[in-house]
Amino acid sequence: MKKLSFICFMILLCGYISGCAAKSTEPLSHTEVLFDTVVTIQLYDTEDSGILDDCFALCRDYEQRFSRTIDSSEISRLNSAKGAPVSVSADTLELIQKGLYYGQLSNGNFDITIAPLSELWDFKNNSGEIPAAQAVEETRSHVDYQKVIVDADAGTVQLLDPQAGIDLGGIAKGYIADKIKEFLLEKDVKHALINLGGNVLAAGGKPDGSAFQIGIQKPFADSGEALTSVAASSLSVVTSGIYERYFEKDGEIYHHILAPQTGYPYENDLYGVTILSQSSADGDALSTICLSLGLGKGMELINSTEGIEALFITRDNKLHYSDNFEH
Image 1 (spheres, rainbow, N blue to C red):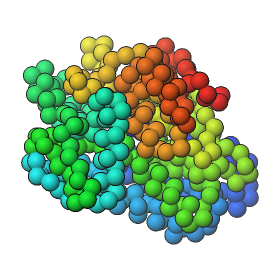
Image 2 (cartoon, helix red, strand yellow):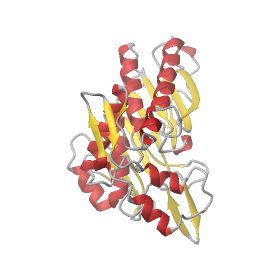
Image 3 (spheres, one colour):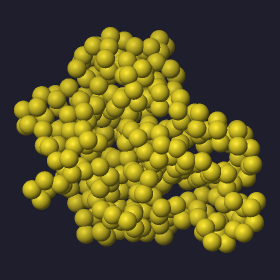
Image 4 (cartoon, helix red, strand yellow):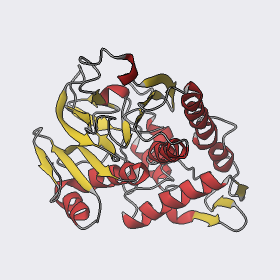
């Protein structure tokens, strides 16, 4: 599923790394590879390892339902149904509806039916092969979020184009992070850091009242060097960047954020966009949308959206902040 590799965020836990001699101040922490990336969850105000186990059980359950590459998942069943309605769980239905909302908001720049193009380019395994123009055009014709029919009463989803396919990689990790945070709050865990492969969501801040410091990777830096950092307390920090999955050929960079209108990677003045929001699912989708729009239109969208702030990295590695971004 989408977005940053683990090194795209360096979690700078000041006071934990060097000044925490007392065991009680160390977080309860676990790391696993899920969603094709590294997942780390840290709990600061509980010693109940069962809560941490339950968080990862939730992650595995969501992966088994949302992944388009697991044959038994709900998304795979939908994609292989050849246009027939498919019954899905309430969570899958909710996530698809949220994805369709952002498709409408972005006029199709964000499109959860991007799966055929994602499979054609196959950035996970592609070492430099550009698909044939005819194949791109044919595949692009099957990408259209408006041909997804959701029947909430019946609990079914239908793809009107039998060759269409849904890929929730642009929003699923954010949604899952939100659900994990909800679960932790139900368990009275108020200080936690959830990192789903770079989609970072802070439940509260550190127990001492300070915020978590989340590093934003310098684009194309092999070492995972941080370009800057942002403070996060009860806040989601999600970055989309063209340096996450890409290959270079004949001096051109081909990255994984594909334009449904053309079938090729978006081309504009941006390397990456970081979204600060309460909802990680919102941040997930908006980071992709803003990256597709470029600096000018992306900044205009964020400045007109209440409760959302953004940091844009242009191709000269300069930082551009939305109007109310605190830095």
